[in-house]
Image (cartoon, rainbow, N blue to C red; front, side):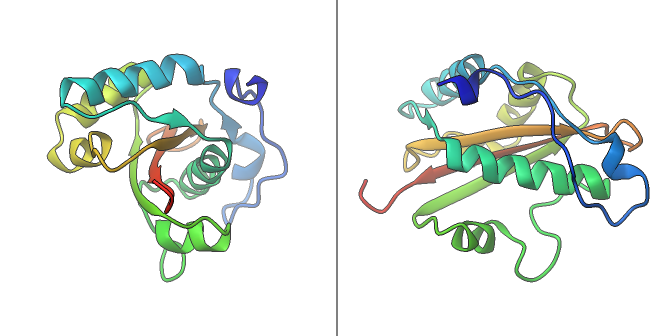
Amino acid sequence: MALFNRIHAFENVASPMSGIADALVVKSIDIDRTARLINQMRARHGAKPVLADAQLTTLALNHSMMMASNGRVTNSFGPGTGLRSRLAEAGVRGVAAENVGAGHSTVDSLIQDWGRSRGHLANLASERMTHFGFAAAINPLSRFRTYWTLILFRPPSH
């Protein structure tokens, strides 16, 4: 899918911090390579491969942009902003988990780090999941610079 091969730019991002929106950029990601890295980690822990999903990637991108614009690494920015709420707002139903991260400059180092974290690895290697969305945003003016979001998902029909 052309949508997944590379993501290069993002425009018109609203930010509560003056001037930050103009600095935000979507990090270019090779989704096929990312899928291989995610699925290699999953295979090492006995889980089946997951497939990239465009809608989940859009949701992951929106969350990465929100983290980057606020300079915070978090799964939620308050009531109604957690993963469950974001999925419901998008009309997505199913079982989901989310990993967020910041400060890593490459997908490789991020996935390796998640592999050393019990909570992140539990999500990453969950046998229940069948699909994923993945994105990153850059805020060169922030402490962590790069903000990553991985959404793992299983629709109700699986």
